[in-house]
Length: 239
Length: 239
DNA sequence: GAGCATTTGTCCGTATGTATT
DNA sequence: CAATACATACGGACAAATGCT
Image 1 (tube, chains in turn yellow, blue, brown, purple):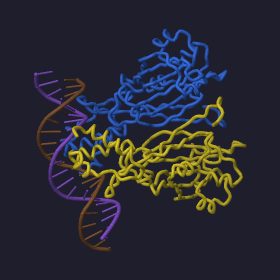
Image 2: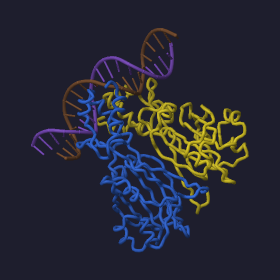
Image 3: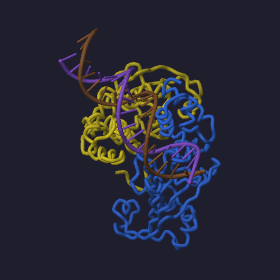
């Protein structure tokens, strides 16, 4: 082995031939096998980590990582949970906080209520294969859900809850980009230093009446999920 | 200075107080000023680079970097050039290749022509402040443009060209995500190793007839542009 | 719970190569 | 050509987290 670039290429090929979760040779193994210094082995693995091909855990090792695609669009209904289950992985969501807060300015505008109107705010944390992966803040318009205290600790999907309350929830608007998360979210997702997340703001309305039901912001680990934003083509039939 | 984490925080604050393009202290300066080793100074600057806060150029130095926002949606018309000009930066686009190619399968489908139909393919390279920033591949539906050889080497905006040919171009569909670019694009954009780009596929139609005019794929430097995808809310008036 | 080996994280120091100015 | 600045690579030491006994 002569250069770090080669080392990265060799390791990448090897990693790509392995399955999600499999163990990647340790830094020490790589030193011995390819006769390079530890710093070079480290930098190669770190580059693969930056490309989301591996995950590294101090004390445990380096493991192959496979990102899951999640398409966001108006027409596609499948939840994150369904998408993840299809890929043979498991997803679970927990409510970490629930309370009544008065609507801040931009949210009041989105939900079409007067500023200061009390809203139910949910904070949820979604795990993929026991890894904290998505942190959600959701504001529910007044009176869209009956007995929220009961339903929300039990039901994992707010969409189902809305449907159960007699609504027809559709994603009416979203805005997505990639950004560093605020410190609170950084901790919740146990992110490594300097990492970025998908940030998706969204508004859910009733498909029939157009009434705003919920506004949300979600931070998603970019190394676990690959979000694909799609604008529907009104001139083509939905698949 | 005790830890690398502090050093990053201190440098980040300093960088954030500076303006785009300003010179950041060199690795050597940081060693002397904060009494750390070169490797620590390096890793700190590299982390700021990973957060898109600085750009590093071998032999030249490290410079403050400020990303530009570019919103993609159906309703927003402004071109990338206009967006960049508003931020006080300059954008230029060059046609690097133009030729006739038979339509590959997915493109033929998008443009609603038979597979193998000859299409005009454009390759363009957009510079922001003399930095190669976006590489575009564009396929034009048959006969949508008169005398393409003449117009395309002169006009920087294909949208204007379409308008000049009597069409009413609107963005009918897009799909956006973040991914490593293919090697050819990696070279064109002079990217550092292991970096990712925005990848935006798009289809432009005539707003009146719905006729497909153009399909395109664009790779954009994620450290120069922050793309924001937005789905319009049909229940709210456009701003 | 304690102890231990393994593995990655964080530092240091040094030397040489390469691109820019 | 020379000076500057970043890139690459070596080596070593210790810290911190994990997983197992």
